Image (cartoon, rainbow, N blue to C red; front, side):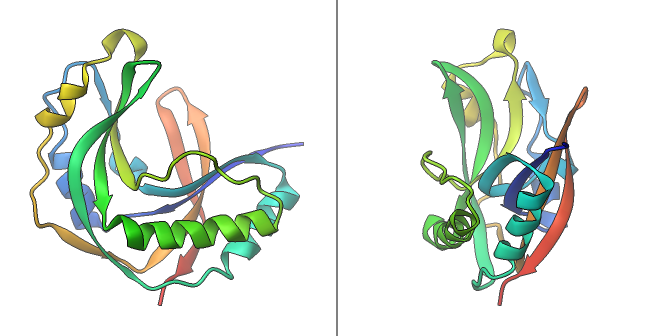
Length: 179
């Protein structure tokens, strides 16, 4: 039985992704994300069988929400066991994205997907670090994204992730409009 590794995300428009890729560079040891990897995860689902994947796709089609007007926030980091492993750019306003996250989460729970117990932090990952290349948290101050950049997102997407030698590859499974 094959499993599908799924997540739900917002994909910024091309101009915003170009701004993000333009901010990448100058950080030793960073493995920068490419354009196809830039997204704001609403909900990681994980590995599910084909039947559950189909139920997820149908359930997400019932989620309603308004188109979002968003902006990029400052850079920050996530760490694992005290070691920085991810560099990211925040996405604001948190409240608007969190409302959509909660609706997606409720739809997924209705089809048997366990809730995510991690705190929801709207962000776009721009780089990852291997264990030996981990910088300190001050690395976030090395990334500059122009303030005042706003963008609109009129849909969210269900993605399937495949892990390869070059990192994760993401394929859109379905797209869901926001009014």
